[in-house]
Length: 592
Image (cartoon, rainbow, N blue to C red; front, side):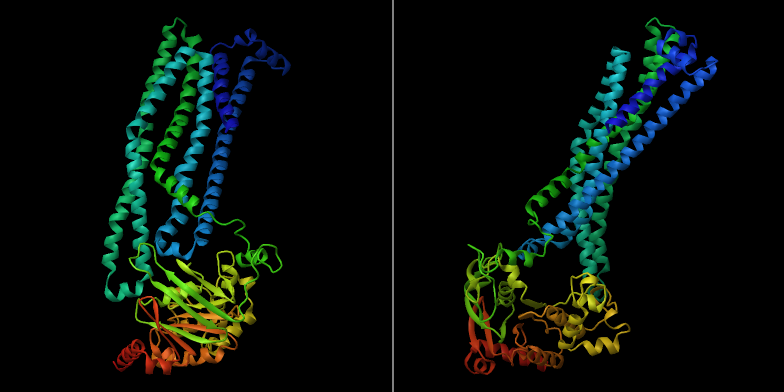
């Protein structure tokens, strides 16, 4: 930036001697430096020397433009590298937040900040700020040179241009802040409308709700477009008004020089320097003004990103495997640290209570239970009874408001949570499949080079989907399933979800109503397969339909966040009124 300013000033400075020589070539003998150059370089005529001086001028002007282009390229590359770092840091910070954070935040807003607002910061805050600094240096150097030439005239020119841009900025600054906030709010609504429309595209198509989502998107898109257009107009329009003012200032400067008593011949070099200086100065001042205007317009972007970066600071050394890092910290024998978290006996919940933020009543209320190793247990109850919340406590996704999750006598805490989760496999109700191969979906979240194909096949065999993959899919495990697995049936997606949970050979598998979308016969077959595949694993099934729980060793019935009853299926049918109600409702639903 500094070198750019020096060359821009040099381009203005070289004009003065060149025009002076053009108007009066005899000045070569009047200037010691020019006379020395004339003789040292062996010029035989004044014309050839003028061509030489003109070539130097041309070189300086070309070099200054080249350095300006290089500086802008470097600034642009720097601003986009910062955008990459900010977006990566945001993603890292968001991903490492507690699960509870995602229950209270719209995913479209999170994605917008990572992908769009970080770009808006690079384009609308950082790059304009860099340009303001760079061209501010250039403007300062040119003004300094003009002061050296003609202080009074330079002061007048500087005050006129500076006050003009300052007045424009003070006039539009409130409007820029207001429309900047409107742009950000509209951008959030745009993302939400698009995300929700395509996230439920099947329902949208079946129910004919395309117009609804279009009506939600279009007004927000209109506000966004209008805000962007207005900010760009307010950033550019002053340039055209002030260019006219600049032309008048230059003409006035020439008249001032002529009126000062100097003849046209003596005033022409100085006037030429002021003309070229104005030509260089106006774009520099425009860039400075535009930088301030863009910063004002994007103030809400700056505030939001700063707030999110501070609130979602990623953990130190987040690039390391979290479980491995924490295991190193807590290795057995480490003085003053927790012992390694092993699961050889039982999982216990001791007086666990949990309340969601802003909830009127707790979802779990003083729940205590024990799940022995190698058992097959179920959590059941009516909708809203607290089954999923209890599973999320076991999975380490939620921290109890009070009470403890204990594994083999060791309390699960944030320090050893990753070590506990490394022993868990989880099958959700809705299996999310990426638009990649079957193998990649089973080894979810791993790069192609890190996938253990033998482990993929082993997991698929246990989940009883290996034969289907080889016999029915065109490319076997290399078959691309399509976005969200739309080319597979519900049962096939569920089996891939089970295989995914089994890929790391976990000690505990938690199924969160993972068979609820299946017909009864398919559900019974999968439950039989789950029981047969346990092989030393502990299975925890969250079930709404009781056909899933008949083979369980123990069933925990939840009602309003409490354990209403527990025991084997047959015992509960005989002894628990709450469980009989659930069983009767289940039979009625099957009959329908």
